[in-house]
Length: 407
Image 1 (cartoon, one colour):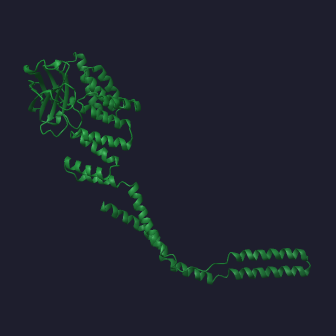
Image 2 (image 1 turned 90 degrees about the horizontal axis):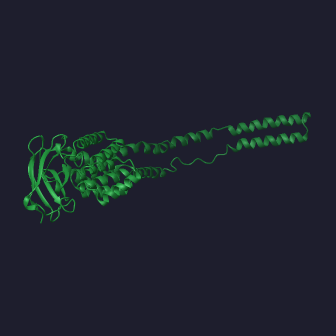
Image 3 (image 1 turned 30 degrees about the horizontal axis):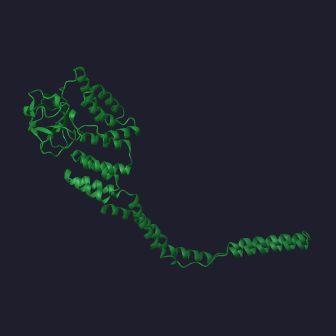
């Protein structure tokens, strides 16, 4: 920022020089004007011309060329002409060349202050600090800390919250991401794209469930823009999870029609191919893998059978070993489907920033949830498996047994 203000100072120097230049030339201009007025003979020349014309008019009267009435009219015209010519030659006294010298620094100061105030109001100093934060941060925690400081310093800068939101989302801080989006919506208005991003975020936070709040956001978004691609992409995921592959294909095609991001459109086309394959194969759980993944077999321990209904939701989640990223893959079945074998791969990613193909090993967590909520609750059943390699899905599946109950 010091460099920026120095640059502003250098830009103001020419303006200040132009303001001071007339004061520096005032003495020369004053002397030149005084010399001109002292040597001006315009009045004498006008009087001499008047006398010659008057003498000529009197001579014409004596010769009888004009009568007295004509003479008086012509003389009156000569007198009026002389007055008009000499009136413009009346000049006031010259001011001192030092007059008004105190106004110059006042005007110069006003120019500097007004330029600074205008920039503070209309300029992008806050965005420059954001740029510096990105350039100077060498890790995600450092960048988040810098941006959070900027959020406190400039809470009304929409670019701060637009930068924080994806970082919160991709680092698995869902509630913080929702808060950043809410602030962004408050500043930018309830635009369809922002509402769609919030709906999608809350959808994945709810383990790909259309909660009442998510549905309300979907309805509002489609009311404002009936072609919003993010909404249709999310609805396609929801339909796919329910096994309604025809509906998923329809939603994804509508999403592609309104999408400008070629990478996202390509991912949806791959999803459409998978849905079409499942339609042709009867909707089985296993399908052609999209890149490296994990083939997993989920079963329920005999001691826990009969505790919950068959339609209870079961979430199969793959996470990175350090637990720093959002879930790399999420799949959903029901308790009645167990035991089941399925393939987790990039098709099951919650976001483009976190997918199975980015990891070499993952931790598998399987949770049977009575409420369908995101957070574990007492009475939920679960099982897990550490250090599962990500790669070829053609071999034997990894066994995960649901054998514990959350107290």
